[in-house]
Amino acid sequence: MVSRLLRSAVLATILALGAASAASAHATLEGTTPARGAVVAQQPGQVVFRFDEAVEGNFGAVRVFDAAGDRVDKGDAFHPGGTGSQLAVHLKPGLKDGTYTATYRVVSADGHIVSSGVVFSIGKASVAGATVEDLLGRSTTGKVTSTAFGVARGIQYAALALAGGALAFLLLVWRGAPAGVSEAFGRRLRLLVLGAAAAGTVSALAQVTLEAAQAAGVSGWSALHPDTLREILGTRFGTVWSIAAGCWVGTAALAAVLLGRVPALRAATARAEGGGGRGAATARAEGGDVRGGAARTAVLAGLGVLVAYLVAAPALSGHASSQNQLVLLPANILHVGAMTVWLGGLACLLAAVPAATRRLAPGERTRLLAGVLERFSAVALVSVIVLLVAGLVQAYVLIRHLDLIFTTAFGRAVFIKLVLLLGLIGLGALNRQRTVPRLRAAAAAGDTPGATGIVLRRTLRGEVALIAVVLGVTGALAGYPPATAVSSGPYSTRTAIGPQELQLTLDPARVGPNEIHLYLTDPKTGAQLDDAKEVDIAATLPAKGIGAMQSKATKAGPGHYVIPGFALGVAGEWQLRVTVRVSDFDEYEKKLTVRIR
Image (tube, rainbow, N blue to C red; front, side, top):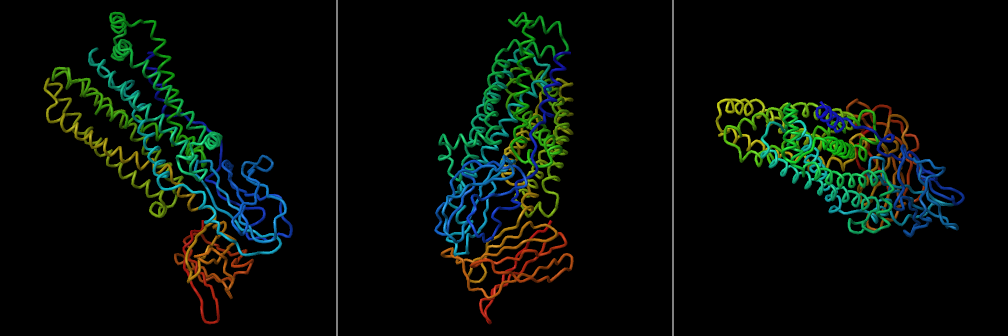
C-alpha cells in the first residue's frame, strides 16, 4: 500500500507541480521620459523607460549616446521608486544642446531579451550620428551563441525525459521480472539516469551562461567573466536554472543510491507483484533489510521533489511565467511532465529492457516483454492525451490567431512540433493496436517474439529518431517570443525608400489613436536627411474595404517626422503607403503591412 501510494504521489508531483511569482506579459515599452522625439528646454537628470511588466535591468541595460556616438549616461540603471516596470539611468551633467539617442536592452519576465530605443533633443534638434539599431548593434550576440542556446535547451529536455521518464518507468511499468533480470535492468537504468543527470547539469549551466551572453550582448566565452555571471544570477532566469543544476546533481546522487542497491530494487519489484511476504524474504536473503524500506521511501520522495522542480523549470523561466499564469503554468508543467513520462519510457523500452531480457528463455522473454509493453501502452496513452491537451491550450494562449501560425517563427515551430508529435502518436498506435496483441498471443503460446519483436524494435527506433527532432524543435521554440508578443506592442521597421533609409515606428499598434514616427537617414553614413518637402501616409484595410485614410506628418527635427494621432479604428492587416516628396517633381514611395490589434 505504501509503495502504491508513493508511486501515485511521485507521479502526481511530477505532473502537477505549479507555483511562480506573477508577471503580466512579454515586456512591451509603453512610454519614455523624455518622450520619443521630444525637444526639452532643459537637460533632464535621467532618462526613464516604462514597460507593461517588471523587467530586469542588469548588464548596463539603459544607455544614452550623443550625436558622436559617445555615452553620456552614468551607467547606473535603476528602478525609479522601486517600480519594477520602470527602468532609468542618470545623465552626466552639462550636456550640450542637440539630439541624443537612448537605448534599452532588458531581460523580460519570460527570459527573452527586449531592446529598442528613442531619440530626444535638448534645446534644439541636431543631426544624430547613429541610429538606434546601429547603437544596439554594438551589443549583440552572434548566431553561434543563439544556436548553442537552442542546443542547450534541447539537451535539457532530452535529459529530463531520460531521467524522469526512467524513474516513472521503474515505478509504473517495470514488474514481474526475476531477480537477475531486475539487476541487469537496474544497471542499465542507472547508466541512463546518471548520464542524463550529467547532461542536464551541463546544459543548465550552459543556459545560464548563454542567457548572460545574450543579455550583455557579448559572446558565450566572454559571458564567463565573473561580473557577467554575477549579473545573470540575479535574474529570474539565472536563479531558476542555477537551482536546476543543483537539482540535477542531487538527482544523480539519489539515483545512484536507489539504483545502486540491487537487493532494494529486487524487493521493490517483488512488492510491486503483490508478494509482500516473499518480497521481505527476498530482501533478507539477498542482503536487504526490511527496515531499509523507510530509507528507500525517503530516497524516492527526494527524487520526486527534485524531478518535479526540473519539470517545472521551463515554465518558471519561460513564457508560462509571464502571461496568463493560471492557465499557462499548469499547462506547461503538465505538458513537460507528460512528455517526460512518455519519451523516457520509450527510451527505456529501447535501451534498458532488451539488455535485461537477453538472459531469459524465449518464452519467458516474450511474456515479460508483453506485460511491460502492455502496461507502458496504458501509461503512454494517458501521457499522450495530457500532452496534446496541454499543448493545444498553450498554443491557443500564445498564438490565438491562425494566421500567426505561419507568419511568426513561434507559430511555425509549434506547427512543426505538432506534425512530428502526430507522427509519434501514429507509431505508438501501431504498437498498441498490432504489436501488443501479437506479443500477448506469442506469450500465451510460449513462443519467441520473432518478427513481432523486430517490428517493435524498428518502430521504437523510429520513435526515438522523431523524438530527437521534436526536442530540437522544442529547444528552438523556447527561444522564440510568443506569437502574441510578436504581434503586440509598437510596430517598428527599417527599410529603403528611394536612395534614403526609412525607420518607422507606429505606437501602440492597437485600435484607436496611434503615434507614428518616421526617420529619414543616409544608409551609408547614418546621418539624418533633412531635404524632404513633405511626408505623408495613406492607410487602407483591404479585408474590410477601408481606405485610403491620409495624413501629413509634422516635422519634429532633422529627418524626423511625426503624426501624433493617426486613428486606426478596426483591427486587421493594414497597408501603409509612405510617400516622401523631395521636390516638385520627385517623390519616393514605400508600402508596408502592419497588424493592428
